[in-house]
Image (cartoon, rainbow, N blue to C red; front, side, top):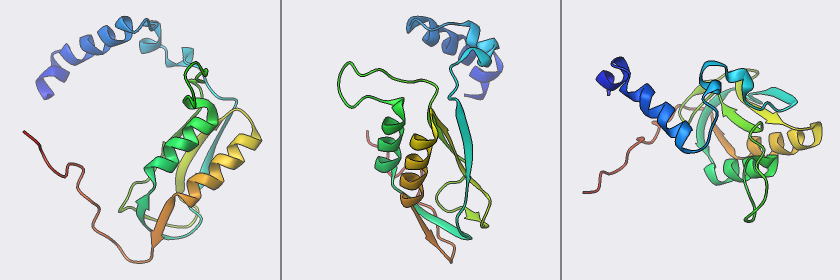
Length: 139
């Protein structure tokens, strides 16, 4: 992996993927060409403590609600909206620390997304051992 990154093979494959999907290679050198939501706001941790769980299904549904996915075939996708997580399961945060950033089209969708995402996070006062990223290798 390190060699592929150092010798440029990974970069070449990345460019190949963009081209194969009909993407504009210019965004590689100029990310400002990518669509951006008109409202980008960071949500602070509502309390101090440790994140013990994040409901991934709810996070995904919230992304769809923002417009970043389809509820049915043919629905348009807004590539400017989305969710950026600044903390993961097992992290300790103080109240007010950056928790996530929401990219939304308007205040109404931002507020709805914020409520759903905050409800999707479980907190505890004591540290936990985060689950492993890979639980089992099959084959």
